[in-house]
Amino acid sequence: MRRVRRRAIAERARQAGLGAVHRVHYERRSWVTGGGASLLGLLIGVAVFTPLYIPAVLPFVLVGVPLLLVCWASWVYLMPPRRLTGRRWFAVCDEGLLLWSLHGGQPAALAIPWEMIGGVEEGVNDAQGAFSFRLSWLEGDRHRKDLAHERSLTVGAVMGRSGLIRAVRARGALPRPVARRVVITSVALGSAAVLSWALMLLPPVNDAVLGDLPRDLHDFARICGEDGEGGGEPFPRAAPFEPGDEQEPSPWVAIEDEWDEHSGTGTETAEPEWGDDEPDADTVQLVACAAGSGAVPDTDISCPYTEGPLGFGPATQSVEFAQGRYRVTVYEARTGDKVGEGVLEGEDDVECHEYVSAEETGPIYTSPEWDAYATLLTEVQTQRSQRVPSAWSVAGMWRRSPAS
Image (tube, rainbow, N blue to C red; front, side, top):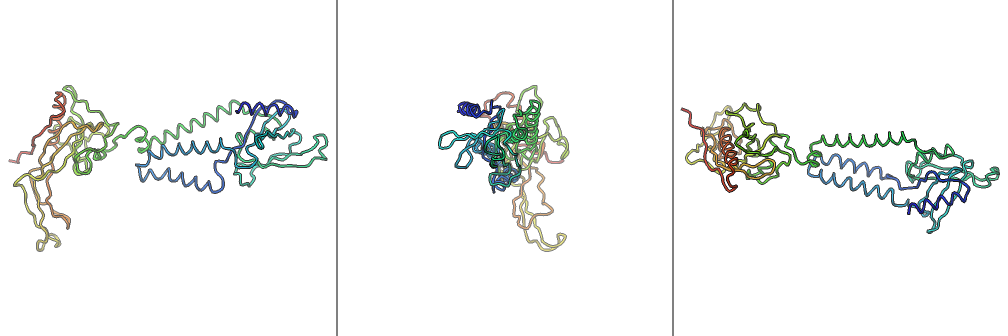
């Protein structure tokens, strides 16, 4: 269809004595007109700021925005402008400018020799958009300009607008230099690459494109869920679990009450200092999810509390404390697969807390110590490296020996 139209334009230009056609520009719709600027600004604001507050919508934004832009671009470049005369084409020829259009399905053309063109006025305040310009020319006998009368046409958005205006002002076809095309293309591609790189630095964008990457030990709490029973989403870019006799113990993290209470690089033989020697989040292979299952029998104590200053005054509240018992399930961080389980007891030194909240009633359970988790994780990896069927489970109880 485009080739047929171009041949028709070339034939009409030849018949009008304008010579060969060098470039053809056609009218299109404007990207933004009237109140569209406000709407576009609103959409951009929603697309940029919503994922910062609601990260879950980022994948929908990444899919929806490009789709919206494609639909918008198709509407702008493929649909004819909203006017009764339809779309107009502007052919830059050797001897002048040819205006070509279709009226009721029939082609119509107006030939304007270069010497009859008066000029181009940019910055026209017209409803067709900010890129409108006015083309003026003399109509009549080209040899008797004193008898010709002036005409003008307001042109809206046009493909290759700057090239068309430059050709009209220079009274001839001025193809864009190859070097300029290369520079413009390189700048556009470079800008797109820099923008893509910058967007990939945003964790939500990075995760949406490449898959979730754990960046903090607390992130693994989602695998355990709110109840600590597991079943949450794993991290596709976490370190893979590779058990084996010749492999060093895997880095791990233990989650209690949705917090990372303990962790290890897999090589410690004693509990590391808090905040020191913790594994990097992207190296963690195993996640131990602890869910409370009650108290160890005969370990509960009752502690009185008062609202009086400095602990003086009658007791107004009693809170129970006990040694806790926890069901621990171990999952692979990358896949979320269950790799083992066990039962751990909390610290056996049950003591009253110095302070409790006014609403606290208890019971408050002690938590397992670091060495209990380390022992369980060692057992899990040893059993896994021996390729025991997946139905196995590590069921035992570890507790710190009472101080002598």
